[in-house]
Image 1: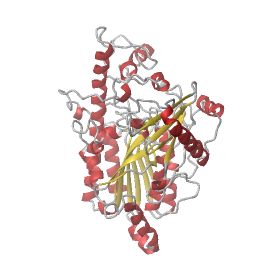
Image 2 (image 1 turned 60 degrees about the vertical axis):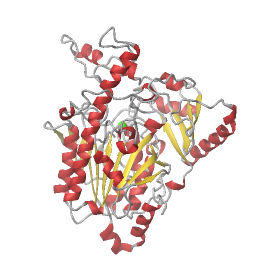
Image 3 (image 1 turned 45 degrees about the vertical axis):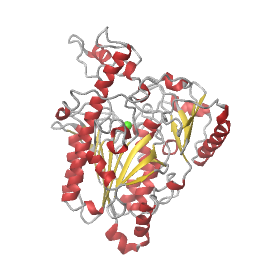
Image 4 (image 1 turned 90 degrees about the horizontal axis):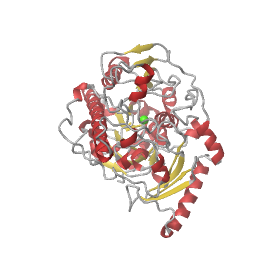
Length: 516
Ligand code: CA
């Protein structure tokens, strides 16, 4: 059996099984999403970190299900990715382009939780939401509220069912969200209905503040640096232009530095955030250049991986609970992240670029009896495919206006995936760009305050260091990829002129939603 058919055959069995079969066989869904969790920090993806920072619990989902290797986001920042997941539509259709100055998500529009709810599912969302407006389409919601919806690692505030605000002071946010998800399964569920639970961690988002339980993890070891740690950005103007470098843009707060005691108020904030605007900062005037970069990397990557360990343990608790409660056999479990992240590759942290590390989303799915254990899927898929995939798994018709395709019956036939990022200059001065990726090639156009094209041959240059756009040997590929890009832009209705796209970036849409 071909890989892509595992789900297809399962879904088809459900769909063709008729109403009686559907009422007993509809799977429960546990959709687990972390924030900024790169595939490189999940050991089953086999990166240079796999041995040193294993994630055995998350890996268990792949071991008992499928690891998807080529799932990509359509706009690599928190809110826009989440909006694309919920709607199955690109940012220019669902209206949520940017985190900064992008307004709020229009919760009155169609989303997959609403469709599942209407089809008889009990729905819940717990943890990070980050879309401004209160969740719609959920029977229960408890979402992070403070920090403009980012939440905080400690003393996080949650909005309950779109109404009151609850401050949780006992646990680290990862533990709190894990506790709440299991608690809802224990006591919040209507056992006469199938359920769809989304629970979404804040971790391992900046400022990578782990639970003290993991403080000594990696204490006496040096985490190896990735191959492209000292990328020189030759031939890639936008890559050279960003403000998300380990060396220059990690700030004292990220690096958990103690500020001078006399600093207060604005002065304290300025001290903590040195680097955000490319200001130079070092803890010691003698520490500079490569030595400073290496020092900052160790501080950063260890805290990031400690946060990941917390998430991995929390996932283990959920999998154990599903086993103990007898739910595991009829529950489809997904583990993903809203987008990838740079763990020192190209000398960076953060995301945004269409380069592989942030473009790729980890995606693991377990569905006992329906998906064969330990399988791997290499089809080109996107976050807009999640909604139709879950609808199809639940036997719910997929509305025609959803732009994604179900993993089971549509996405596998795709030749390319399309991407468009808009936010600038916040937070990391990454040029807005769009692009297309096929199995082998990637074409990117940076259009905001530069007009730069990049072409990569992912087979020969998986780290995307050599821009081939002016290489005569690739002229035919460039032509073909430009045609593919044009076709994708038209197919998805993303046909704004560069001027209109720049206006989208420049627009400052006020948030309706405000903290108290
Ligand atoms: Ca994110």
